[in-house]
Picture 1 (tube, rainbow, N blue to C red):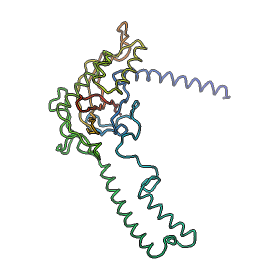
Picture 2 (cartoon, rainbow, N blue to C red):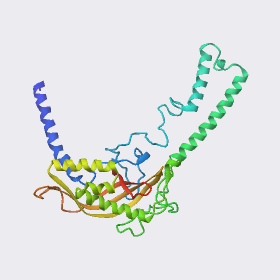
Picture 3 (spheres, rainbow, N blue to C red):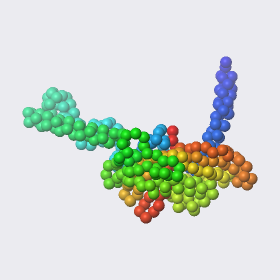
Picture 4 (spheres, rainbow, N blue to C red):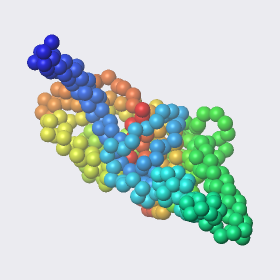
Length: 326
């Protein structure tokens, strides 16, 4: 086969692949026409770039945010460690000590004084031993803190929940979405645990339906009362794209099937609650003029998403983020 024949074969192969992939891509975009567009959008305060804990309702992982105003590291409690590990660049106190020890020993060896030649006699050697003991002590403390910091959190469903599955709830609330404290006890005043009460769970379920209804009615003014300005900006953008296609997305028959609390915390004056939700809905896109079905289905389906709500003093809960589950 010469080069010309090989090129034509390659082009045909690419064309076939694209032809097979295009319907799949269209099907995915049509199936994700609901509020939020089936992507992860919004902000979770200082935890925007930290995955929420898995729950009974959403046992898998969540996708990273495709759309967010937050910047990595902004407002975070702890800075990400610099490359190089404990003794690497940016290692702080331990890095400085290690560099001093290593530098002194290497200089001594280079200039013929031996490994301890650069430390100036017996007193310096004793000082070195003392410093090494201190370093070992500090390292052990740091490792102990790190293990505690990264230990699996077990209080997502309440402080007295005990072993076993997390408390969940069905539609109609019953005993509520969960009880007790939200997941995780943050470090410092800007990441304090938050207690979520039955009234809060009722508000979350109500917001699930109200947001979907306002989206279907293209009621931007109503969305401003239900979601943060950031989320509304994404909704407006998606609605504008629908209008450009002369289509409107209708999400009806929304019914919460199961949900539970992933984590809840307070940052300054703002309170956050991240909740896993599995709900039924009818998701269809119709022609704006004729009402003919363009995408979706008249048949109900199920969706599992992780929603984060935010509240400031004197204000009601607002939708702050939607994340898709993997």
